[in-house]
Image (cartoon, rainbow, N blue to C red; front, side, top):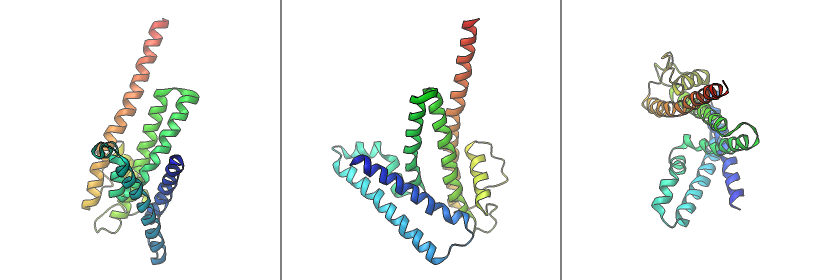
Length: 205
């Protein structure tokens, strides 16, 4: 039953991601469409909130439960984090890769890389929605948003696209922190792979 409920939540996260992303790709959303989107997102929110409350109720030490489920708490409190529940799918996929073929380190690196681009996508959607109607903003469509998000999460930062609203700048700070952490893991993994390759070559020589 627990597994089925987890799969339902993952499905709802996917549905939420679709409805959440839609306004970023459409210049003007009709009232009926926006009403439908709001209903779907409220249903998803209620499911996530119910799951969190049940977990808190069942936990013997509620403080410890909250400490170990900070992401779930954030997903309920911050709407744009809700799609990140799909990271469970990414983790499962990385585990499959690890067991089937190419080794643990590559699986971890692949998971982190996918997570980086996934977070960049969610950030691009949010910044597009937040910035598009702001006067003086240079992020007017999803193309601008994803370009900004990718250059930010990879710490390239060309500066040709940047948020001007308070919400956009706060999102940028969070994305910068996530980018430094995630890209650092990828860089360290690649460097470690080259070091081991060099050591293997020296041993064979």
